[in-house]
Image 1 (spheres, rainbow, N blue to C red):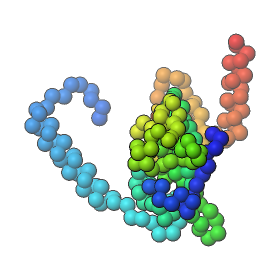
Image 2 (image 1 turned 45 degrees about the horizontal axis):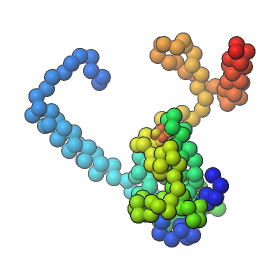
Image 3 (image 1 turned 120 degrees about the vertical axis):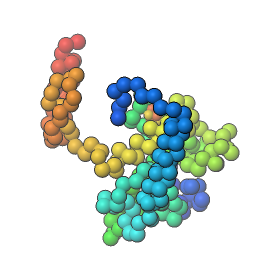
Image 4 (image 1 turned 90 degrees about the horizontal axis):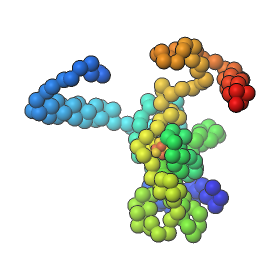
Length: 210
Ligand code: SF4
């Protein structure tokens, strides 16, 4: 991605911106009442869990995990930030994206945390990344996009690319399946070295069969 430059806020000014076993029949009135109750509960939960902007280190591991959009709002412009172009690894479309990374100096050590993923949009004239959606809408003619996703990401790409980095239940080390396909998976933890050797061995086997 030649010509794409990471920029700090100082450089950019204000740019940053149960499964059902059978059929269940319920009346429309009951359904709407149920939806109302659920919406109320969710609103209450949201209020109770409203995140507080942490003092000190940006997103230290002991901070409770929050959805990516919450992090993005917690760390607005006053933080030093960087925009890092990349590609979505989740789907088959290889959508181009840009990560918003917050930087902070903690006890002399630079901490960097990804707080948002968005579609990659580049200014034709300068090659700079444009992250502000309002600006993107206004200046569509002056911008470049990957023709695959045209500066957009699907909800999965926008959310899971960040979630996978920090969610407490993310996969943190290689896991090897120890039972046959078609059965509920049982996995054991293996070392990175073992994982690499196993992959190499399997690829060699495939190659030899061709
Ligand atoms: S952003 Fe969505 S559509 Fe694009 S590659 Fe990722 S998962 Fe697939």
